Length: 337
Image (cartoon, rainbow, N blue to C red; front, side, top):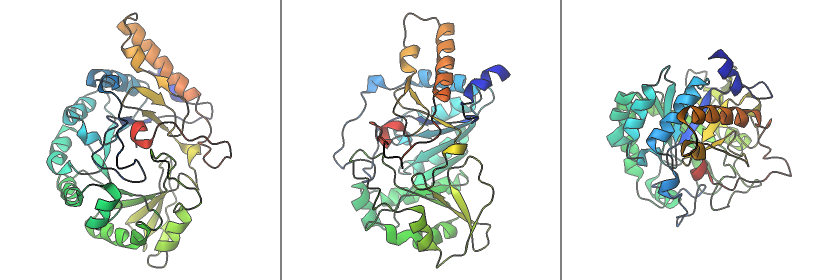
């Protein structure tokens, strides 16, 4: 076991313990920074990993040293057997810490079953506290469903409930302070995320995006923000609010990259292993899982090898700010948030 775990150390000494797993590329919202309102370029269903295939990959990943699994999408709660998937991951030998990122629409019905199945916590994407603005930003009138989902998550003690917010200029950037106050009142942990070049609509603009400095400047006149010293491999830079203990986070993937401490891999819904959100190459695990020429033992050995190759090939950083940066062909919804 110890020898195998070494395959998840890259050439820069980063030990990979975390995997983000996309369960589907489909979503029931159309957030403008993610995809156009008429987006329909979904992956064919037969290309997605089956639950059995997914569990095979995760069992191998855990045996290689993966300690945390985050379920993502698209919208992972659209997966019909999501509760069963959570239960099966939780029943693995040395089960990983298990969390999920969702838009919250189906949480009202699923929060307690997910908690009972072994889910520890949730991240909920929410960019506005205004129902009409929510409708304009997502092209769906589901704000009340998200609010009900957040209450259900809190009632089910899927804690801490984290709120992920993307601020966009002229759209919702006037809500930064209100979102912090609301999160404090509700007991949620808010994290602002810089918009990244992963939108299917191609509207990302480095020159107009709201940066970490912009967000801090909006909050600082209202709150006393003190940096939290210990960050580790966490993507969010945390700040104590008015001395704490409550915090607000800023994930500055573009302007303050945190690649040097990254310990994450990503598995797409169609079985491609990626070393980074912005990777331009993927390692195909689905073709191994579906091979008719390999024995089960050979499949396992090859998947282990592909995990190792993916980690070893990882670059020192994503290179967004490099002139040679190339935006990945896949949008965020197809990679997994």
